[in-house]
Each structure stands twice: as structure tokens, then as C-alpha cells.
Length: 383
Image 1 (cartoon, rainbow, N blue to C red):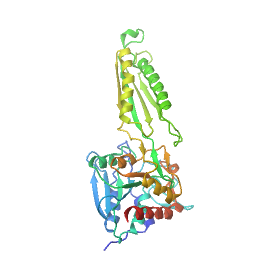
Image 2: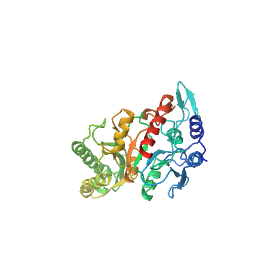
Image 3: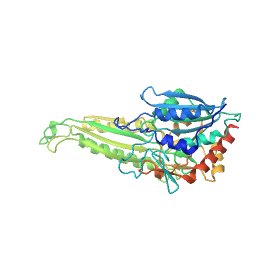
Image 4: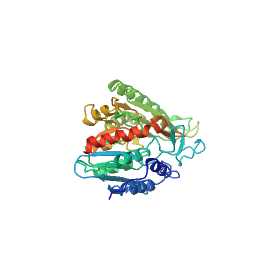
């Protein structure tokens, strides 16, 4: 006999109380296992078949896939179980204690995006005694805020397989069918140090970097002339020169220099193709200065995402929400679920303005409408 989960607000309290910070700093990074176990403890008694998957390359990190019903197709309600770090001392409330104030629920992850899970489970609760024609799946991933290693691991093993997927990232309950990608790259130039009184004694990496930056800026201009999408607030691909480090003293020829930058490509732009093209453009600089120049990725990158405007899920979402599906600048796990064959949308109750900031909150007025919205999606996709 299926057992209903706790009340929605109780679930929200309990999940916010469990730290699951993802960070590139090992001193801050934490496991998400407690969150995964809590979700499993609610979903198993409801009749979901629950699979917990450890990430082989990330100790202490886990994905959860819970399935109600069986067969091909179906709907995935997906989210990430981790949060960003928090600014201790800048919060007016305890980030790990759900605080109700001014019709808002404050807490780390309320909006981005732990708050989605109690809402999704509350909607799913209505169907635990209903035979489903297609399965309903709830997916919780690890490390979205850093490497997206959880979503990458799922893409590698080919699950979940579903016809539709909704990722509950904060979009203000408006459907999103595309977003830009992101990659972060490093140009590293190895020269040769020497006494600055005689340039022939070395090979100046900063001189070569000057040329490299010129090539990169010209390439940026060419990309922005070639690619344009008016659905984005910034309708062209962006390339930001983020930081540069080189040399150690004014009277020494600079022996090494590194530039780090990011690229945010539009849908239709391939990350590997971009890297290949830039490597080709930088090669002559190394030859000119007779030194080594390398382009190295700082992380694998997140592809741009797009679901066709005429896709069934897009039309369904537009009818249910009353909003045309749009585009956002931030990245999500959507490309990886698309890679698995699902029509994918990003649609959640939170607001991106609340993400990654002190005193993050979820408006109470969003909760019941979000439950109703997901209930309608389940009815249309699974019954």
C-alpha cells in the first residue's frame, strides 16, 4: 500500500536543512548523499522504484532516479540536488533553516533549486494510486553548480529515457526552450626569460600574448557578425577576457603568460568546432614568436540548448502557462537530457534573480500554482 510523503512544507524544511554545497574549493565542497537519501525516503514508500547511482569519478556524489510506472516514453521531472556556497555573515537568516517571512520562504536552495523537489513530489502524490500509461520519473542530480558531472554521467550510461523532460530551474513559471552554452578556455604561452636589457636573450610571452589577444578580439567580432538570435537579451555569442597572468618583474623578459576567458555560444554553435578554429588562428602566433602556445579547456563546457518551437512539449507548456517559450542566458542540464532523446523544457517556480545570492527565497504564491502546473503535465504526458 503506497504511503504518502510528508506535507509539502515539511519536505521543504527538511531538504533545505541538509547542506549539499558544490564548489571547486575542496574545503567548501560537500556530499549530496543526505539529500538523495531524504528524497529516496519519501519516494520509495509512494511506490516509486528508486535507483541511487554513485558517481565513479566524484566520491560522495550521487544521482537519484525514481520511477513510477513502466514502459517507454513518459515524463522526467528533473533538478539538481546541490547548491552554490553561501556568504556567511551576509544572510539575515540561517541559510539551512527554512524561514517564513513576508509571504516568502527563505533558505539556501529554495529557488535554485531544491524547492522544486517537494513541489514535484506533491504533484506526483496525486497519481500514486493511478495506473499510468507512461512512466513518471523524478531525477535528482549532483554537482550541477560546478562540473555538471551528475548529468554527464547519466548521458554516458544512457538514462533516463523519456519522451519529455522538465527541469525545474528558476524561470518564474515561464517556459524556456533555449539557452546559451558556456566554455572556459586558457591560452598558455611559454616563452623564455632573460635580462630585459637585451631582448635577444629570451622570448617574451607577453609580446606574443598581445598578438593573441588581438586575434581573439577579431575572432569575437567575426562570430558576432555571423551568429545572431533575437530571442536572447544579448543576441550574439559573447566572449569575455576574464583574467591574465604573466611575468614576475619589470626587468625580466616574461617567460610565461596565461589568459583565461569564457565563450557563451548560441544554439547551433559547436564547442569543439570553436576550439578547433581558435587553435588554428593562434598557431601562426607561436610560429612568429618562435615559442609554444596552447589552448586548453578549463572544463569540458556546457553545450547550448534548444528545443524546437513546434515541439509537443513546448506547445503544451505555452498552453498551460499562457506564456510563449523563451530563451535565457544561464546554463542548465537541458543539453544532456536532450542528448538522451527527450523533448526538454526548463520551467520552475523560482526566480533567477534569487539564485546565488544572500537571503534567497521562494515566494509562497508560486507553490500551489506550480503543483497544479506539474499535475497537468503529468496528466497529459503519463495518463
